[in-house]
Image (cartoon, rainbow, N blue to C red):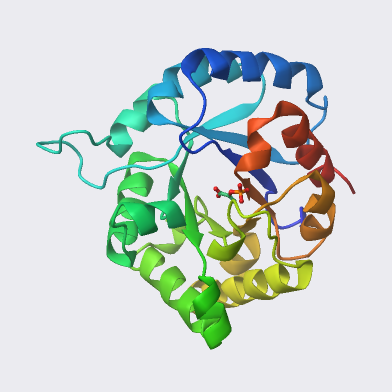
Length: 257
Ligand code: PEP
């Protein structure tokens, strides 16, 4: 973390978990556990149908609500899809784009990720752009090339003034939901590389100000060490974000000096 130059953001990704009533229960429990002063922004990304319940439940808690996906068209004959304007209108602030599960199961590509980033920014949302390599790609030694490609494609055509609203989440696929966390060194190496890639694209000032998260089995026991890395400005958290106690322990790890 480096709070002098950029925001620390702890974001939960609930994936396809929790009903609207469970969302309310989670928020009530979280409220009793959240520290009074927070030096990080807290975000909870919930399934689309739970967004209205989450907006209501997290109101007055300084917890932002995020979506887990968005479609890139503004409106039209796209059965089942949700537009960026629809999310914004509900009061959503963040949206996860390009999560590896969407790339793996729902045909998300670097091209659709870029279109979604543009649509989200156009609507005034803050995209959390996920990038990350598979185990095979890591073992082939092509992690950095792949990450550079994903970052450059996601940000293609994004002007510097809009980049301030983007968050990049480094999520090695082999660490997501597997219990295997990247070591602090592995995570830091890629997050630093992402910042260098942004610096080459946008210059030093903007690169210094962009929030880069780590995601992949982040939990209370490893959060402090990961967040102590200068280029890791927060976490995108799946499993541990479903339990208010564990989520707050991670928030507390980000709250330290
Ligand atoms: C995620 O879904 O983005 C994630 C990092 O999941 P987990 O923390 O469960 O590995």
